[in-house]
Length: 70
Ligand SMILES: [Zn+2]
Image (cartoon, rainbow, N blue to C red; front, side):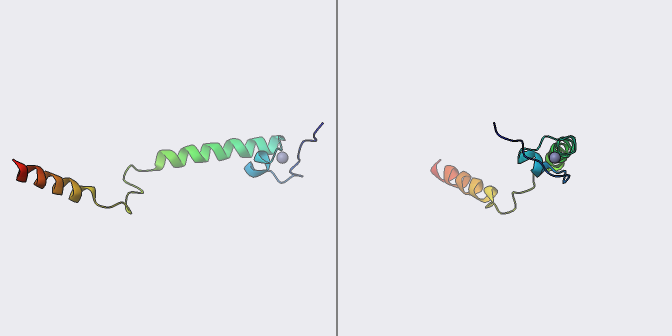
């Protein structure tokens, strides 16, 4: 039987991920999960689109082509 890993008092989400299931690590893991959910909620839809090429330009160009075909 495999022995359960212990964090040896160093409670953290990563210790929980490593296999420790002591109370301190479970609490840290729950807290970590809450933090991640809060971060997700705080993210704005426009964030992270800065490096994308301008889609407006492409759409405008296509529109011009469609108009030119008429
Ligand atoms: Zn632990």
